[in-house]
Length: 404
Image (cartoon, rainbow, N blue to C red; front, top):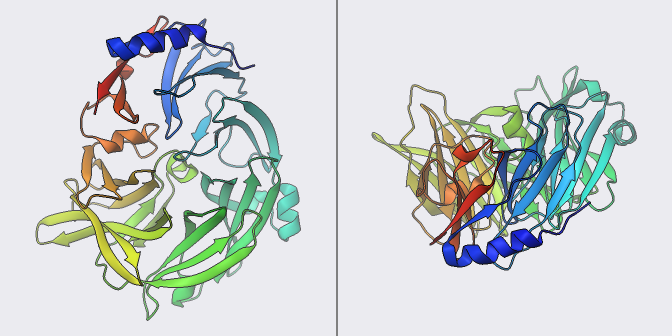
């Protein structure tokens, strides 16, 4: 049951003048903090011996934002937080891979309400055809505006099928649909592609796949409704881009990052956000490597933003991942070591924010190079800062506001 936090609100009012505030201790120690980008920061507390599995969630948000406390009771020792920037719902999944064709999850709304579901993939897959959950290879899990989406690959003889399973947030209805069927042994360009979720267009889900050669070299794009009805299909040409090959990886709080899934040898990662197509990757000029993003304007790729990539090493494997944010696009680059970049929608010069985890639970960390090694969340006029060295903590924990 959601609890009123009148004491917390009082502490918030004190904080505005003092620039620091405390979250009072709960029965169990605080042990972690995660950011639900665009909604707030969630402090987690529980019995560290795991004798009891209950987890308390305390939402810390900015001026004119609400604060709430909630609990959920996982069966597993570890759960997996899945979220996107500003989404109405986030999820704690007890298992990423299917367990006997099922996933047990806790749905968290922006208002602090929790619903628990044990989802079976058997029925929607049976409607689709003779696909056994045990034969599916999970590639990603992403939450969109209308649904939580699982991406799978299924290989049978020479046929490789890309399957998506969509669960609508409001009623937990599940829809399985085929995104693409390819001949796995074929040498044709159209069969040498790997599909992924590139973004969302209104309620619809945008899927994309890199095409590596031929006249149509670029990206094949398909748009589906949350119920799995294909709305459109097109090919975007790569002309105007000159990226070195990289492995596309997941970034942020999505399944591909948590599972460490990767797709090799892609010359540019495509993303659809804010009503436009963007593509990004590493371009090398002599000894200088830059992370460059382009925006598609009237069928031409126009440079949108760039930042110097200090970690690129031609002798090392290169991984690139992206995360759509309200302010721009967050990029993960890993070669000799990992590095976070932020490409704003309004500035041609990117921000290099330093070392970042691939499965980061603090995407706002990309927005500034200030306050290194601290948890930081962007508010309208301030930064919310937290020193994670305080954790685990049996007592109160302290936050700080800093003006931008």
